[in-house]
Image (cartoon, rainbow, N blue to C red; front, side, top):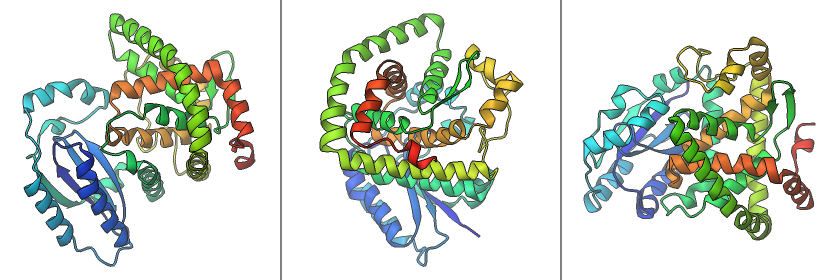
Length: 360
């Protein structure tokens, strides 16, 4: 039987120092002890970092040394306290968007930590052990590739837009229903996320946000193209290829689970739409049995949703705000709509189109 722990550290600190001197040191110690682990940064119950730890194969589960490391660090570098009322006000809208529970605002003591057994709660959150396992694999994958960005000022938005564009370009692209404009590819989820975000705003704000994002896109587009060609597909080409290949391997693993009936479009949640506020374009699909059947039977939509959802969980660690996330969604889909043929030709030139080979 597998066993899982959570180490949660409540601290108001997003410096590179806490990553280099504490968090990444803890991660290395856990890995050396044959623990599988990944890192998250959250706001529920107050600003915190959490390690989710699989100790099933570990021969050393003594956490006393890790506890000493945390205590010494927090004594030497305590983080600033913050106003709890302002905190609750700031996260009121986000909590509604993320459907968080009321306890999210039961704010814990700053500069404190806790180890706890989460085996039952983690397993309850998923439908089977295979889902827990692939969730771990996805998080470990992103930690491996992104940990050097954790705790740094966010000036890497082009990098993350770029790798998602390159990855999405290798996801199967097909039409599920032409008349209903229902498509399956590596980009439609970005449009869906952006539309969902717009739907959470009033009409006046929707128009302003869309206009602002479009202006930013037009200003950023040419600079991004240059970055894509001279950096991701030149100086960083080997690393970029490696990331895309590793990500596609996990995508194929997800498809294998889907084909075995181990996950569905709604996994890990149950299929229940009655409490979900939807944009009319989403409603047209989710409330139409024929359209929904096409969605639920499409392995690409189901499995790539897992990849992106896990990536989004890493955004707080990367200092990418919710607004920047939705701008990324907007930018990626606009680029796909307007520049995709040129991008695909460039990727073939760089031998970075793997979809035909992997999915054959």
